[in-house]
Length: 383
Ligand code: SAH
Ligand code: SF4
Picture 1 (cartoon, rainbow, N blue to C red):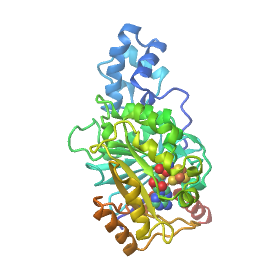
Picture 2: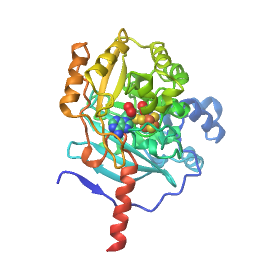
Picture 3: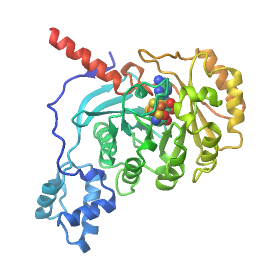
Picture 4: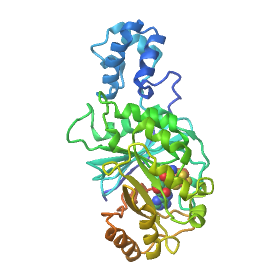
């Protein structure tokens, strides 16, 4: 069997009382170093740069590895801050190379992160921005879970660090990386956590550290219209829109947020997205739901709606989950839909399902592993 399922767990880590340096932007790090009296203000900039490189380029988790920082300073930093990684509760590897981690960042706060090889330049990491979601898209399992809370920048960056640890990508390679792209397509609505997401992107994109270019970072939203401009201005990230329907009546049902921000308003905000160009296209995600949004007429309406926009289309075969009211469209239906998009000039629009054997697909995160763990617990107690 190619897939492994590791249910072993270390004892629960206590929530760190000290702030984690990995979640601080450069400015915050400098200020924190001054506040903690680790360096006098004029030296703080240099000290912060040194520390930054150790944390984000070398990925160290121990202040004592920072060999060009004076011993007393290292000790003072260790007193004031932490560099500890969160606990990895579960790690799974799919037959197709997809990897999934369940990460406990604080007691009761667990997030899933998925690495998908051969996506983007080399491989993409799908990160979560919230635990649960306040929106209730009918086809999404995350939407059935109440929002626990927004993730902090540190908790978002930690997802990248954990993946990097596992892929053996420290120090940050400039060439031949396996983790080349980041997509905010895990749990939650990133635009309801713009502060955390924007700070995390500043950290991840920094050239002296993890150095993933903003052009390789994509933020997916269900369409929080008032935040789109700020997203573009604050992050310069690539935009993905979960469209799924071209008529308000249907989108109101599938993506209830549409009742607040209908399609015409959404399209206007997308056209005004900062930096949009042929080299920086917006991606439209469209989940294929049998008998709901998958006819040739729907495909033609999609082409009409996107006319004149620098756009890519991503058709996502629906990933079923227990209790879902939808089914995935048949393969010939998806192909016929894609052919119409192809003829209109959109290349290879079908997203191949990945990591299905480890339940790592879109919209399946977290709850499925909770179920698996619950059943594993049952097995342990009954044996
Ligand atoms: N909240 C954001 C980002 C997370 S969802 C958003 O909605 O865009 C990432 C993508 O997965 C979205 O396009 C979402 O519509 C899609 N998705 C959710 N559940 C799915 C499922 N069961 N099958 C296929 N795609 C799904
Ligand atoms: Fe939330 Fe996105 Fe799922 Fe909708 S699709 S419920 S916005 S995570």
